[in-house]
Image (cartoon, rainbow, N blue to C red; front, side, top):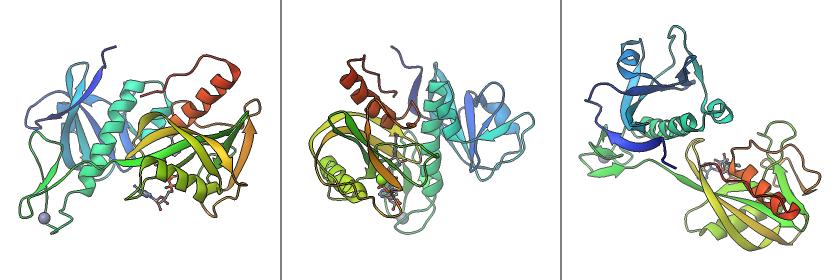
Length: 276
Ligand SMILES: NC(=O)C1=CN([C@@H]2O[C@H](COP(=O)(O)OP(=O)(O)OC[C@H]3O[C@@H](n4cnc5c(N)ncnc54)[C@H](O)[C@@H]3O)[C@@H](O)[C@H]2O)C=CC1
Ligand SMILES: [Mg+2]
Ligand SMILES: [Zn+2]
C-alpha cells in the first residue's frame, strides 16, 4: 500500500501548500479537519514562533506553524493530539503526531544547550545549529519498553494514578543510559510490580508522540515473585484471566495490541495488526 503521508524537510521560503497550526492548547481545527491552506493560515492573527516544512500528504507539501500561544480564529477551535488519535482519521493523526514532535523539539531547542546562543534551522536537514559551537541538535526520541507479562491464561496489568478510572494496561518505562532494551524491561517490571520475567520476545514498535516516545513492544513470561506495587507510580496491579479483562487502553495503542495478540493466540482467534 502506498503511504499517503511521507515526511520531508521542505524549504519554508517556497509559497503554497497546506499548513497545520499548533499552540500549547493543541492544533487548530475546523469542520474540514486540521489542515488549512498555508497562505490563508499565515494571514490569520497568529503568534508564530517557528515554521517548518514537514512532509507531503497525497503529494502536497505540508508545513507546521508552531505558535507561542493560541488565539481566536473565526470558525475554528483548538484540540489536543490525543483527541485526534482517538478519532477516525489515522493519516491525519500521523501528520499531527509528527508535527507535534517537530514542534516540541523546535520549541525546546531555540537556544544552544552548550553556550546559550540562539540556534538556527539547518536548510535541508531536520536539525538546529549553533554556529559558535558547531553543534547540531536533532529531534529527540525517547526509547520506551512496553511489555505484556503472562502466566498461562493470566496476564499482568497495572493502573497508574494518571489513567482513566478503571483502565488497566501493560507495564512500560523509559530506557536509561547504559541499558539494553531487555535490561530496561527487566528493571521496569521489577521496579513497578517486583515480578521477575523470562523468555522475552520482541513483537513490534510504535511511535508515541506524547511527547516523543518510541515504544518497543514485548511479550514476557512470568518467572517468579509476588506483586508489590511501586509507590506513587502504580496504583494497582493484578493478574487478569483472558476471559475476564478489565477496561483496556485505546485500540490504537501498542499496549492494547500486545494484549489483543496474546488473547487472540490463547483463544485461537485471528491476530490483530499493529497500527503504525
Ligand atoms: N502507546 C502505549 O500503548 C503506551 C505508551 N506509554 C508511554 O510509555 C512511556 C513510558 O511510560 P511511563 O510508565 O510513563 O515511564 P516510566 O515508568 O519510566 O516512569 C515515568 C518517569 O520516568 C521519568 N521520565 C520521563 N521522561 C523520561 C525520558 N524521556 N527518559 C527517561 N525518563 C523519563 C520521569 O521521572 C517520569 O516520572 C510514556 O511516554 C508513556 O506515555 C505507556 C503505556 C502505554
Ligand atoms: Mg512506567
Ligand atoms: Zn552553542
